[in-house]
Image 1 (tube, rainbow, N blue to C red):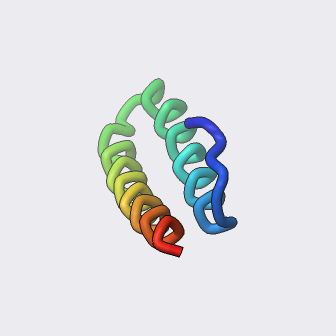
Image 2 (tube, rainbow, N blue to C red; image 1 turned 90 degrees about the vertical axis):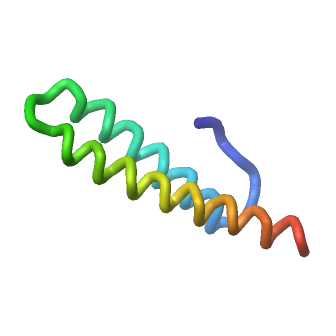
Length: 61
């Protein structure tokens, strides 16, 4: 995921998503982490929704 200009909140959401991706990549090489990765993917998806909503708010201003 590349750097995205925007509010501090958007940058933090992007950073959180990037960190989750790194964590999921690390875990996929370990045994018995499938459920953890699914949970992390769910969190990632929620952060993605928050990010999209935030971008919409910022584009309205």
